[in-house]
Image 1 (cartoon, rainbow, N blue to C red):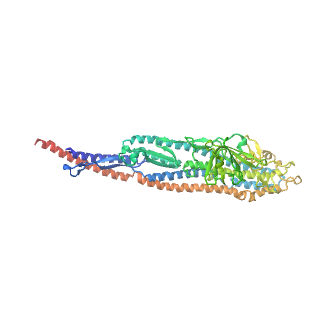
Image 2: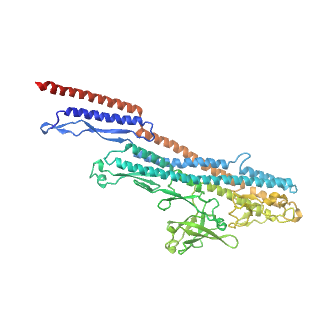
Image 3: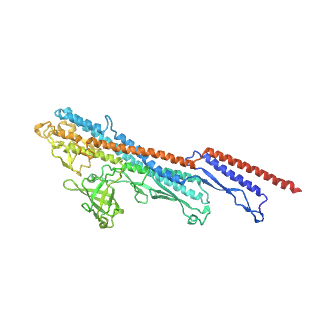
Length: 635
């Protein structure tokens, strides 16, 4: 039986529903400038009806608010997160490559090209004035000036690499911090949603954190129902729902609602033994961070699918343009040798292959069946032949990568390589190019031009000449070691000092710098101070098309600046393109989730009128009851 005050109940439900709608609208308006806030709506429906009198028909009982929902598009959120990681990657690349362009700037009166032009200008003057100490000093000073330019440029690149390395650690810390905040919000959301309601504001805070996380790494976000009965529809009560959030970073689970698998950085430890350091990549520095998951497994820093600022920083710090070492295998020469007792793998280098590897890294072996096998190593040493050429390298494999069956593992035709094969032209790429330029110049000026490691007959270097004292020439160019001592060049690729020479330590022989008489410019004692052959040979360095694979010396320097310009322009174009794309996606997201003041005011007036109408109806019904009870009750 319905209550006698049934009409008051209906009007009260109408006022309560209008009031809830007005409160929701007020909440939207109050947060119109709140970052990440999504518009909320009160879900209103008719209350459960009652059977009519005599069991015929249904009588409405008013309205009710069943939930307060936020308006978001999961599709647009996923689209935003996906593109935001790409934008983050190219933004950091653009910012840093712009700085690198400043380091390698070539223009009027500045840069390596200018110093080279000055060197060869002074060289041509020296050819006819070899007896004059002033011209000798000017020529020697040109080498000193070139050395300062190379040293400074290389040091700036190296410092930039160190700064990027620090930024990688900061980025990893930021990712973990966001993960911990999301983990804490997951706990709060779970508690508040036990009664079946939606913790909308907390979910908005979580979405803002996911937006920020997507800038650092590419993420995949899933919210799964862990109650199988609710997921299958056997239970429909919202209070039985147990939704849990999962966040994956590049396909690996980072957050599983309450659980968090953090990432961490570990500095690479390089050997201090100078007999080992010659065998490592000179662009590699102490303390460079590798990234691991907190459970000890390796984070795939060089995954081709990794994006975001973290990927951009790693590419910039480690990208070497795909320059890596290649090894002979059973199909091409010497088979790999694996010692299961010591965990050491011995690999034989292919001719003309880069051998200055990182002291730690990964060996990739592609087997005959097309399957790639990856082995991480924690130490690396070179063994040289008697003539100074490289014989083989010995790798200490990471304990988790030990080969269970070396015979099966290395059977059949294979190709093998080591070193980071990151194809991006990052800081190491340009450092390596400067090193190649430096070593080539040192070898050419000291020993004469070389072909496949052998002197070209008739082409003379400084060590084949005689100085004004009648002595054979010293090494004109070399390097300054870590102790500050000048060291000479030792010929032969793989020789003890060959890879020790870099653009950072390149310098002219201090003895020649202090005494220009030691400049050896004649190939025989009878034609002192010069017979022109050595200076002419040096002049060929500028025009020889076979000294570098790019061609002449000027072509090689132009190739460096060209590669840099292309890489920087690519980053700029992608950054600009994805910025415009992100603006479009953000506008689409705002159209769905954003609070529009005009729409909210219109809805507010609508619910205000409903409330007023319900209140007026309440007054009318109240008057009816007043008349029936207070006035007619005495009849």
